Length: 507
Image 1 (cartoon, rainbow, N blue to C red):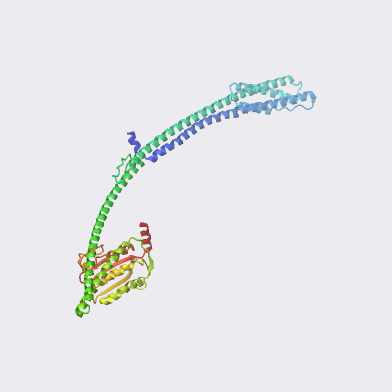
Image 2: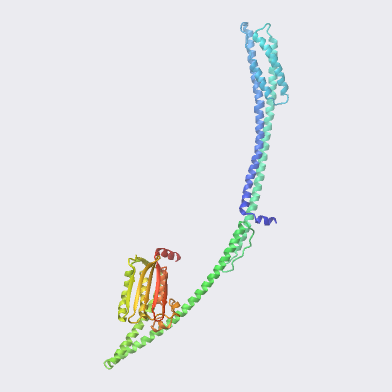
């Protein structure tokens, strides 16, 4: 029960309690020393304010008696009857009064009483001497002086012995205070050391358990489930570790699912790529065979074949060359896909000039096919940060696809505008359109469907377009209906510098 109680005490409370012990011990030592110092002060006060003042007053009284005796002796030896000696009586009375005020030793009261009685008699005799009355009380004066001096000497001896005893008591009291203080400090040090060791052991034990549990975890194994030791900080730390392990387990499970999906996607891509290579080989073989046959016939039977058959063979050769050119473009697209992994380098470009440069190689093909290409750009568009090498692939691929699927008399329109912090591009045509069942897969790599196969393409261009636009931080979508043309819409954000920094950080 005590163990459970301690586990519910906060760690900071335990540390505060142990750190408070030296403070408590210091307060106790201070109180004890204060009491001893008070006793020492009382002893010193007794020495100074009682014994010392009594001795000093007795010495003053003896000095007064000595001066009075010397004056009286001078009067007697000089025989000046007309000048009586002036004896101090009040000073002697004040000194004896001080002795009465500072009575401290046993027997001192009797001596002071005797001194007061003799002082009164001395005052009467001294008054007669000062008045020069005859006969002079010489014998009585000297006898009282000697008696008072004796009592004063006895008073001084008694107070000196009292001072010696008080000094001895003070020394003993100081030694006892020193011993008690040292003993209390030693006990306090032992107690604080023991409690500190106990606290460190109590704190370190769950931490050691936690570290051993963490050390026992091996990568790839199950995350440990730690046993909570209480509701203190260590218990909360263990609880947070358990939460972290739970989240890591969920994260691993999520990553495993993503990895499995990516593996499936890679496998499907590899399968599609294998089919692509096989189809490409087949499609290369067919036009090459047809082209070789047409050229051989023209070479072997030139001058024999009629003009109409020669025209047919030339038309067939021209179509085969077109199909070969389309297949070669697909091979170029493969190399472009491999280049997608390299970092994007951007520069500020004028959109209008860039698109016109991209359209220039396609205009002759459009004229031959009878298709109009029209460019509509919003006026005064600021320059945009683009990859000058890859972004033209977007335009050429989209317009090239539109030319491939648009019949004579059709139209291709490219529009560029600026909306809500984005540059918006649209490429529309009046071609045959795309069947809705193929529309969701047109941006996939190596995706195949009948319209593409008829024109000798495998379908990497739109996959390249999508990846380039995503590398610029944008997105692309398509709308189409069979027989009503196709509209591709994509956008690129204006804050390209932030995207570049983010992409660089991700890499």
